[in-house]
Image (cartoon, rainbow, N blue to C red; front, top):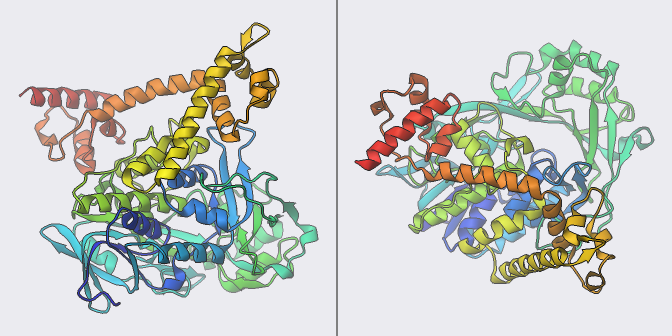
Length: 607
């Protein structure tokens, strides 16, 4: 590394999806930032499926963009196929998803990083965190170099004591072909930060030219592409099809006959895996009554014939993987270009984090991404963005940035982690967001872009565009409320089932002559149709905010509250909630405990 003698404001360890967003946010907020990575070539690599978005994840990507980050723009620039999910359901659960070009996405993000002011990139492996007076003050590398900084963000993902498993074979690795970080997680544990172990996996890849597509079901993208980024214009690309195949009884027999040779069922893996993206071995065992399971054949890029086999994640031996794949109709002659594997890795207990993602054990040490027990590119990028913002604010002494559960899926994600913790890879779902009708993918800019502007991550031009959009929404709503047709105002007509803005527009000469942006009409229509539900949810939000405003001192002595149940006291001392609202969401803390706590806090404030 060519960093000798330099001091940085922020050092980011790891350049995956959490790392690059953290580094970009810090640098754009004016802090001298160093991004430390094992290799420049693997920055922003999509280790598993080259896809962005999906249910709840698409909302996260749009929120990341609304705050001024880059994932959405890179996805738009490298898109292969787009689909809007849940279109038959309400707007609260609709979500964009895109298959992206794996290599193209990494190149696009690397280009954006390399041109970013205040950001330097160095190759190396962090071995230790430099801690002075209880604060992170830099990192020491495997090469013996000490690099100083005002704050450190660790985003090392699966590299922390990573171990790959394929059948009876296991070896240390952070990702196939890359070394594991053996020392860093043990050092962080020695600082008093609790360490755990999780497991994830990836399926095999195939040579797409060796598949019989006539025997697979074709899955095309949507005709209309909705960009992830609010700054991206119309996307006009030739979309690439995906394909669907199915396992069968022969596939299942092969898997059952070799279960003991699987690293998972052979006992070599002891860590907890993700419940929502199980290995094919898990599917066959846990859903033994199902005659088949769906497999999605998804392209890896425009300049490669390699395809991703979504649904066949496995840790079976290579020879068994070959036999398993060849048992699937349409894949009988498929050539495997890479075998699937499982990977175990270390993570740290997110209950020891503040909502800023700063450690409560070591000041100015921030953790983001899979090191906090999450899975998914989108969850990682969201955390990286928040950690980068807060590290930048902290070194400048400018406060903190925390999103509430009522403001963003990002707020739900982080609150879940720091309040409930996790003992399995955490994945975002719309069901986790109690205010999801307010937190739609379509209104992420209206919710979050003012925050991004205040932080310096959103340009003046983009912010003014949002202000103009808000003005047009207000004016259109007023116009619809004033214009009448057959005894009803147009806003009331728009609320009727089956009516859309295009139907309403032809009823008014004034509207027919106006050019109204689609995004403006969409917002007015959604808010009109769901007005009653939105009002009800807003009332719930007001109660939530009231509870959130009742702060608890960080050094509060729960042992001094004699009426608290032992379990509640233990959980409260472990989590150290910021407010009564957060305290009420802790598992094991009941409403009577909150009432006792409220009375004690009130008496203490009264003096």
